[in-house]
Image 1: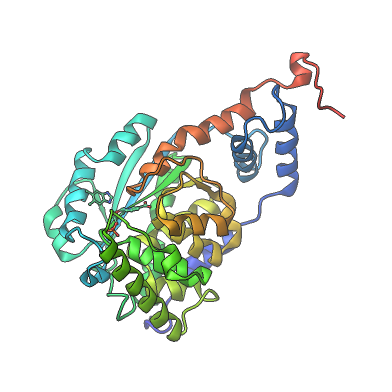
Image 2 (image 1 turned 135 degrees about the vertical axis):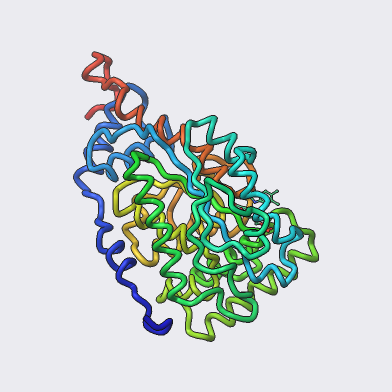
Length: 368
Ligand SMILES: O=C(O)c1ccc[n+]([C@@H]2O[C@H](COP(=O)([O-])O)[C@@H](O)[C@H]2O)c1
Ligand SMILES: Cc1cc2nc[nH]c2cc1C
């Protein structure tokens, strides 16, 4: 296959397998939720989550997810050369070693909620790979060693984007076949909040200044430079023909390899009717790509938290997703998604276990 006419068959078949939820199940779940022994609406967003989980599973109540897993997709970014992050590139590899040793925040949070952590290299740079070495436990699916510098060139070819999407889909498929019933997105990649902002700006037509944030915590001068870089990248990509009507083109022009893998991860989970908890801005920007490719995939997506990055809020609003937690977090790694696992489990458990007014013999003042 030439890069000009890449093989889209894996993506096409993923998209074809994503079917809409049954509106009758949505209705039945809503009606059941309304019969539970509590004032209607008193559980707020938890009620909507329980209904969405049932709709995704196609049963009322839906199953209570018992085996969560987070996939941390790792990539490096050519745009790092523009000075958009204060952290050196090798930190990506150093953090991978930390994940594998169980010493990162995501590992501690995953232990707290009983989640498995899978670390997947989809595009570490040579520097990062050298730091990690031959570490056992790293899932090696590298498509290329880091992306191109999006300020001046495409991040990757369409074929590479497709291969990274396929890698993410394979990871989801393996986790689901191993019995995991709640997936969480995670990422690691120094400088990756810049491509995230670029994806959001390009796909929503937003002004880069409104969707570019401080990432790991950059100063005012770096933020101003970062906004300029995002503006140049989006202008370059759009003038080369990438736009919202061609989500794969936008992903290849502006995304990271971890974004592409996250898109595949979400699409495969949606096809298998397994819920996916999104972490921060990397996942939210990837979700815009996934939803542009397959709008029905949104049924499988749950927003773990509201990252401080402004692009995350812009993407969530566009996707119609309500973040379950809002703790001022901006770490990545899957941390905010993992932390929301018990909330999703609790929502499902309420629909499955709480008595109904009829069943418990309690007067329903709301009936009628
Ligand atoms: O998840 C988020 O919203 C988020 C916000 C800020 C930073 N991060 C993480 O920090 C790294 C990118 O930050 P930066 O400043 O280098 O672009 C990358 O490893 C991300 O996982 C993640
Ligand atoms: C230390 C560190 C940990 C991270 N985890 C996710 N992104 C990160 C960026 C840095 C710099």
